[in-house]
Image (cartoon, rainbow, N blue to C red; front, side):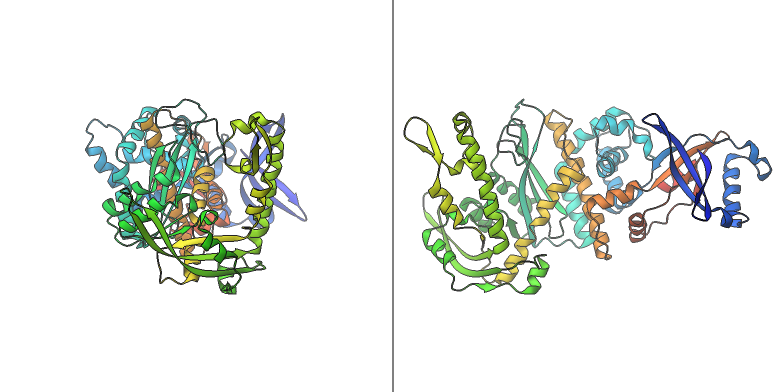
Length: 556
């Protein structure tokens, strides 16, 4: 590390730079921009900075020629943002109480769990790599690798207690509203073909048909904050996951009035009847093509449709929509209970037509038809494939396993281009409100995207059921902190995506150097996003130069 003077235009600039080698060439990374040389010269502020460096290093102004500076090591302090949220939730106290129930534990349980959580938030990696890179975070207490794995076991054993605690704290801290709950299901696969009753083969939402997986059902509130989740064996159907989550809402969280909002994968007559039996209501996407003929006739009847208001189109971010119309019909959803008795669910259906959706539906179908044509060239693949996707446009003719395009199925599918339907048990709720609430379902889809991309729930480097479940609790806590930070920024008029948040927090770096045998840290320039986050959480930024002890006190 050294001082470098760079000429730009008519001025010279002073920079603290670090040398490194890349592809055989020596390059420089700017650690600190000190400013224009003509301004620095004689500037008392710069003189105080130099004196501070000398003070920390044990030197004096008269001995500047003896100043020995080592190469720098980068240290992240952006984790202090999540550390503050961790403290707001009171997790240190919670895990201290949990530790007292396990008298054999001789390590700081809360700090070990926090390290795993913050690593997922800032730079996801395996537990082994997390342990090896723990020194990147100043102030983290000493720990062994085994402490991370032992903590996963405890997290798995105490998942429900953690969810209950988080739910209560969310209501206390943020007045979390749970009158509308969004529910959806996704899958997480493993790079493995080994089944064990928990990891199993099933329908993969990531198109990983040759690898085992687990299924997750997730509950979130209207702000996208997690309420709880359940893990199921990998061969569990979406429609079979909802009941356990409903029981969680009723029995564990004691929520008495709630609207369940879900996609069509959860729309089964049994699920809808169970929702009503538990005293809840629902807004779910309809399986329109499987509706009775009388309903389908009503859908295609142009009478009764109304245009959506420009205000709602703007709220849906669909201002460029050329045509969006809707109509409401009353519907009796009949089904047979377990005893074979016919039961009825009184519903309202909101039918929508969108020209933009029609174009998308057409493009999606044409893509499937092209895949079907490719399958027709290899009949063996048709026999081996399932009935989803492009195969529904293939017709088997005769008894000699001969196939052709199913033109009738293609024509029938084309009729529904642009149409969509939503079923609700809320008979008095206005259609515009039904659409508005259902439209918010994107938040849970976004939640899964965050888990799979930003937080990188997978790859999952664990193979026993207990460790896998502990890993998902870590991801649940990470997701909770990330969503809470998003919420706090949003309420202060700042919209930042999870990726932008991570980028901002990872810009919060110290360069640790050794001067005459003593360590100190130089703050690197903060990004605009990092400054905004610190202001919202009321965290004062660190001084430009700190001793190692001062830096540890600041971060922990």
